Length: 539
Image (cartoon, rainbow, N blue to C red):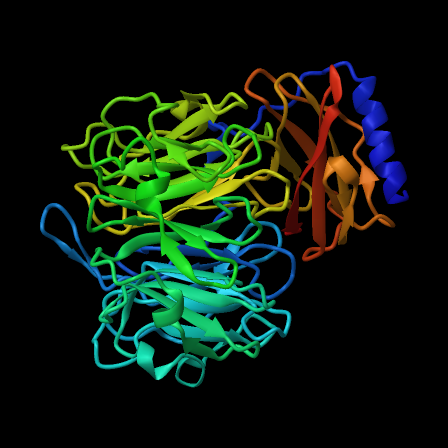
């Protein structure tokens, strides 16, 4: 059946459907985000899967998100135990959200180092994404941070010595930003460093991926501040160039570095945060337009038992942290992000904490945005409570290409109750999943999540494809062979249902089988969306 007819038929069936009872779906608690055993990332053999930073980017240019899992020199938890950390790993996405380690794709990092940041971008203009790998703890006798150049197929070579300036030697990088600072069309680097007299280092790209140190002329004056914890690129003052927002993890300040358009930066944090700079240690910051007024606001988590602060932009690049407080009691929050977790078009606030009795509540926290920058906490509607260790970063992206955001959380091994494993949460806003592979002569059960009391139509094919289908999403089955399964799946109050598919005993073992669902709210057909593609090999 032609692919257009396949989807059109599915919509017609859903529009006229009377919901019928579905087979029992696999039993999962009713959270929007779940760890699904067969939608997972490969485990390592390390005693602790600790990581300080996760970098999401398309390493092999196949249209799906891959992930760099940075190393750490080891963590001492609150009980005094030393937990070794890994070298960097590159996780490759199979296109359906399953992540596996690409052995040898990234050269080993310097021995006994700890990375707290990494950035990806096309530094040499060849159409693929390269990596700047920031190192904060290392031997100190060599160029510790690394520049990895992509060969176009997701394999990287260390070209640090030939591309980064010698003046950068022996510096330790706490944060990095890769963007075009001066409007000349190539990607430059802004770095928070120690070991140099300039705490803010600017490396200019010559257009071929070779960098020179222009910190003296382009960086802010030597401020005497501690190193900056994060560097986020945003157009603070809406003048068309990118500025930087940063926190100082070693001190009580936020920084707003304003770009003059030619790549020269001035720290105007004290002037732009009103009525006064909060006296707080900010562990993480997250920029985004929370009130949908066209300018960039930001949220910041404190390294103390308090809810996040929200800094609203007045439209001129000045911020007020007191105008819209975030509700909540004592909580130990580390990293945060402004992302659309409920798929309603506005930015919600997502934060992770650490199991530390000094900070009160721990786990994952979600504040849902009402569309105008007003937030309500609904944490347990989204994530189960996990008494985690220490979560220093969040990787939020659409790993399975179904149009909603999934989440990966590393555990650095710190805290009272270190998990020492990375959690991969799949967003069940719309999802197709099978707890077991199809077996010849047996019934294969497909679990479907979608709108509450909605219906779903499932199509099957022996081959896959990628065909954009407007607001419905991406149709991932081969149009020449896709067939709509005649039975509809009804979704209950928990947004779940299941489909039983008898697998013919005559089907050859080892053939591929791809499935995708269209989930529809019968009362609002405009909400129809295609799920992820679930792929299997028949046994």
